[in-house]
Image (cartoon, rainbow, N blue to C red; front, side, top):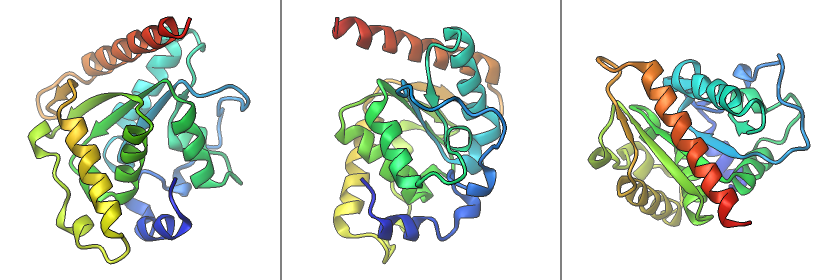
Length: 201
């Protein structure tokens, strides 16, 4: 998946990205060994402590612990190789949730995860958190980044184009009910998991 060169480039501003190792929680990570069922792709600075974490908890609650979600600041443990663990979560998941927020389009790391999910043909449930599908356009900072190859930028564009044409959930942080969004998103994910499990039987 990501080369370490890309990893270094996109983690230069790690304090504001979704992968802040300082934010890795040391309390009660899920035990390793089981495959991940859901991969939550998000910009941590925007949704780590709100939608992303509440969705993670709701999926565990709804499934009685049967569904194993991947959420970076919960699932990663000290000593983990970051890229390898992200790769593992993406390759194993049955369903992904992509939370598109205001800062998402500035993060090459978030975009790389999304491109990998699209290329792996994973079922993706988009959540448009304060943004519109028509607004899924790469930021100038990403397009003009000297750390990214042209092929990376094209991968990101293709992934955003795919996401913008996928039916998802929309939410306005100024007026919306977060609890309702979490419930709707979790129900949609559980339904998709059931469908994927039925299709392989």
